[in-house]
Length: 178
Image 1: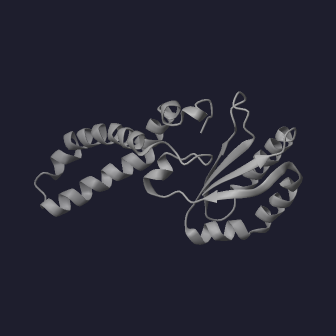
Image 2: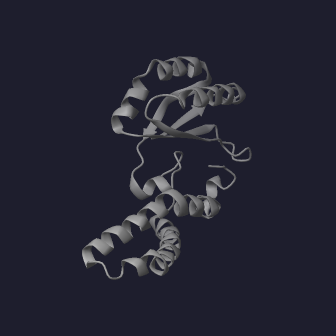
Image 3: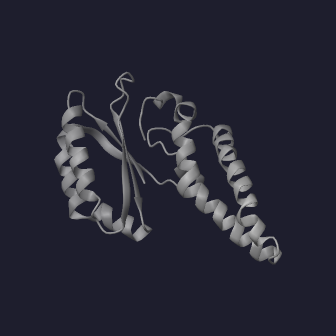
């Protein structure tokens, strides 16, 4: 889940303090996998802050946003923010290119970044487990091989690629650390 909050001018430091304290407290909530905070670049002039949260399941996400902890935080930051939060669910490949303050990079950039991740993973796996699986049934071979491809892309390669290409993928936010 991506959330964007617009902070009132002059209240940025107060908001950042409350945001960090809330993020740290919220990590122990059931079903919470992680939280990433995206601060505007000092030179951008933006007052929008991004919060990216991951959950084990949709029911855990729903419970979190109904929790007393979350409602308390909304009350705490009320005097610090303008307007309502903007919520956006991220799914599949879109989550690799997450940026809650925009619609993300163009599809052609996502395709190039994904290609740069897929090629070395497939080549590496073809030279390693691919050789062990070559005598297996075609369908079973592909099921196992592709499970390894997806796992490596999801948890190892794409996070590294999107971090390395962040400035190219999102030039407006090139000084923002994800």
